[in-house]
Image (cartoon, rainbow, N blue to C red; front, side):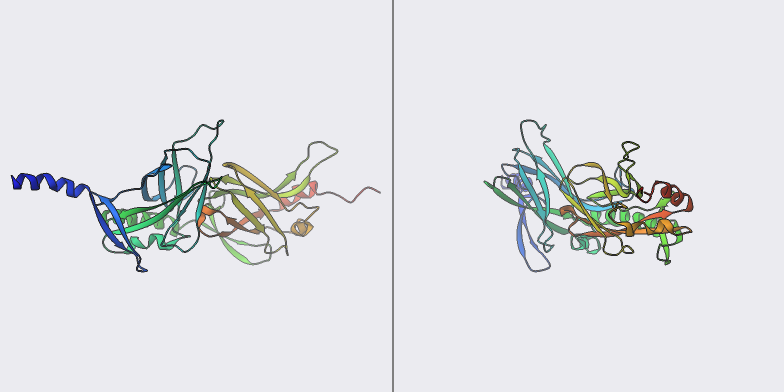
Length: 335
């Protein structure tokens, strides 16, 4: 009888238990487990379905990205915010809006992509560590009205098989990125540069917040012959974050020029900047000769990135493009 009772208890003991986790800074946590895996929290507003590292190339992305994926089931719709951070990272909360209302079809599942490897390397040190690793995330749901504030600690367990697969995926990623096609060129300042190519143009930036498709001059406006429009640059891309993104554009060769825009909606975006009548210093190259490349410095700020992303985007000036734009340049006012 005792033997039978012991056999019956073994599955129960395996089903429920706990694990003491000690982080590198000495913090200790007692994590509830089920069959050796962390039990994910549930409250009156959401249930965590899974937390896992993602190393993949997704539709609409040019390259593989390395980030943490958290999927939740919204139990009780609310209007407010979901904050994600981790005891492993100082500062840098990720904030995602959660909307609800009578005119909105509510999506019961919410997936957030956070802690990209480039921005939060502390969340990815486990890849090179032996044995199993336990990674904590803190999820906080906050109502817009301020009448509730729910905080939950979520854990991801990464074992040796997970680490082996992650290392293999990263190695394949590294092989593709180590030897991209390049182009030796000259910038507007005369400096020799080497650009990484994709297709017929320079490789454009992308991250969890947005993807840049193009940066080029064009005509802003131009609705009628009496109002022919004005030359301006335009940054084109696709916004892929549920939270607001702030974009700042500067020209390292154009003096103190700076333009700022905020993107709040999903989907394609256009940011016009540097009108020739307002910022003529950005257009002096129209009177130059030869072929060269013009750089713009872009700073992207979004909660999903952890820290600001700063990068260069380039536009190629050819004699043909310059000749076409000169035709559109406004002439001196009539006497």
